[in-house]
Length: 375
Image (cartoon, rainbow, N blue to C red; front, side, top):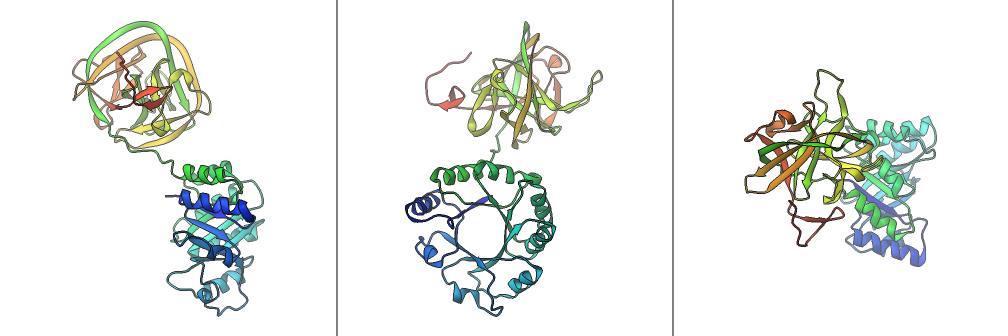
């Protein structure tokens, strides 16, 4: 789980108090300051990180000088200071870390070295490029320590968390805005869920005539057992396969799902659905694997074109009807149990496809407890 540290060093008075209160309520991992007396005022439930210059006395027993801190992070700028930091002694309750401001290759190499040997390494970058962060993440990949990267705001934090697909373990945010603290914590908690997919039995296949269908082109390479959950009803969806699988008359397009008619619902983030007609460049949807694993994917483009349509009607084992309207063509596919790839025009009554049942009714995509019948 990713975590947040909130930096109080630039804050004073009521503004600092408000941010501390927000950090406590948001249950951030730690609060950071360079003043032990400020940290001493924090509740015992809050982890306290003291940031300061490298101590001159290499023999210092750190906890005796800073009894309030759970973590002591020392600002270092040279390999000699890193070696001295490694020689400092704390207690089992107090851990040591380095704070490195990266401005050039030498400071980048120092951060990499620290990340490989210390319990905590905090990095801040002068330049907006994320290439140096990629290098530090790669260097620290096999080490037991924790990497924290400073972010100017929540938007930058979101980028940091995706660098090299894994990002840093923690984000250090210096903000005087209470809303930013809560927004960061929401960002860190936004993991996609494991879905319990179900087996649906095909009842009928009907040629439905001309209509508009949507291809969803994403910014992601789908795996062979992944697709998007799409359905005519908000309570039931069928797992539409991506075009990762070879076709005899056209190249594969592993970023695309030929998803269905424009009225259909697609499952997105936070238990929300979107009409396929609403999706556009920059939208997000949920990529779903045959075993229920999910991940967030970004839409790069949607293609809406008139094509012959096919209506697939299925039923779940407990009697719920699930319907999907797709392009009436052999190359359009859905996934069956075990990730089996099924051409929609070859489906017949009694065949099994993978789907997902949702108990929520929907209003503008959000789940809502109201009376609603779909048929």
